[in-house]
Length: 373
Image (cartoon, rainbow, N blue to C red):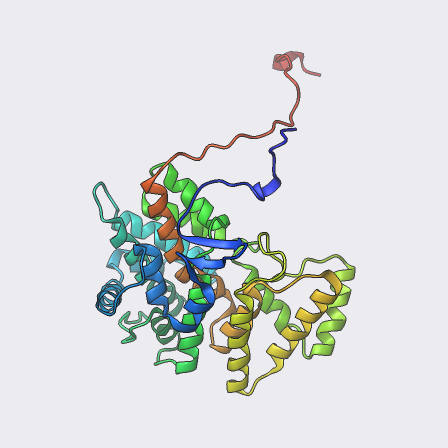
């Protein structure tokens, strides 16, 4: 066995990045040097997306230009709408985004000499439009107008979803969640995007790879599984009783622990506060109280802490977002980080080509089919 082998590439340094730090001693989680706590408390998602994609926090005029470009890029070509209309209502919204991204790449190919920054902005602007155009057409046959009148991506998403201007608290909560989900170094989906980009493939193919990776419950889908768990309990006491039984059966509890963080996910306390604020504002504390009890049981019994996905579940639910859209909202945020990594990979590219330890049979002779027993 190769001594350098690490299952799941855990702890393996697979490249260099100037985009973010995750779990680094003395730094914590930062985006291009800025603390996630400062960004989540003081910035907007548009500021953070500009920081990630263009490498700097925008001045007021730059932010206005950036926001205006995104608003102008929200509409969808007729060919893409036709593709989205063919997808059944039973499709998972992640499959819709995966198909929509790939189709947009065929309709609006990046091509040689294309502006990769414009491609990144186009995807950032259009993902909520793709998702919600399909959602309303597939579920009630309506072809919605993409122009929501909302400046922020968070407001645009909620307005298209609900067909009206969102409550300010909901807009701010979703905006904060987008900042928290925007980037996370060499996680599975980002690494997939970089591997695809390293072959000199197009931008849309790299993002489609990332969406496919985020589709799995061990990565992005954990927030959906967390919501199903939380909503299955009528009270904190029931949650504790049933959770102990699940642990006794050695069932996996989604939304807890992290491959990199060993003591705490620094994003979790931020989204937990938003979950509490939303619960108090709605006068509906059950989901939060059940979540809090589950957190205490998992800490006591397993020494595990909640990750970002756990309290995101109740926060999104309280904003009226369907559970199957939780991971697609993750996509709408993470496209900023994926884009930054694709651009960075292209700037100093080397094809990813790891090796594997072979565990199969030793060399053997071929036996013709007529002589095999």
